[in-house]
Image (cartoon, rainbow, N blue to C red; front, side, top):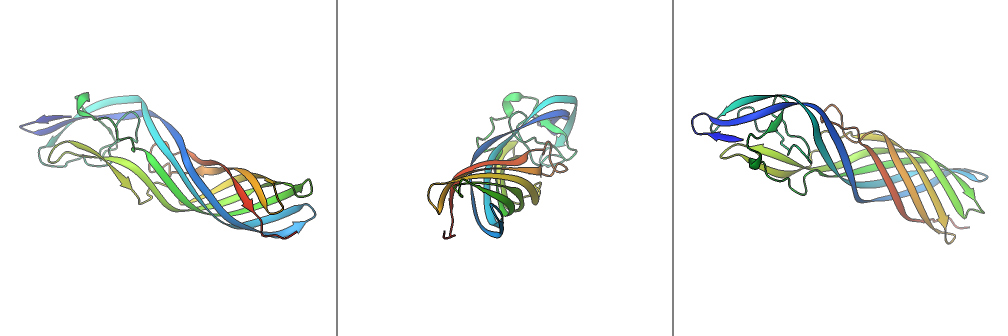
Length: 239
């Protein structure tokens, strides 16, 4: 971006041809309470309530651009600039009000992205419904079923652009949950090995059928909630 003493700021914008979206996982946690609602021989059905807290970092890279355009923003006015802004490579994309990528004419004017940029967390209330089977005299259990996840809270570190009083990029924490799907349906598989009659070691895999984000509100948006969990189960059932 350049500053023109007579007219204000000169901004070069380009249209996006294609983008590459990637995610890197962060540690989170699962906690749930379940009860058996039906049992027949070695089979059983469980349901309950749970909490899922997931963390990840979202990165978007522009891999193809389609043309460019120069626009003049009068000095001291926000004009068409001022919406969410992100560094082109390695962070959520920044656009002007016409949905065009913003690129500074002088690359040195674009600072390195904040390390927190793209950091995202989601908190879901979950209702699982699973069918299980006991093996080896209930020593080993396998569960499979569906999990409904309702979004309680979502936070995302984004960057914004301001040209008054001077061109500035800054990172802020968005907590509104805009752009996230409020309801996810997922498939779940769990394996449990009991070390005592009431305590077991478990591992589970959860994968949602729909995306975490609403594809209509942001580029990409195809990432799905996929978690691998390791933990312990405690049974109140007396044998």
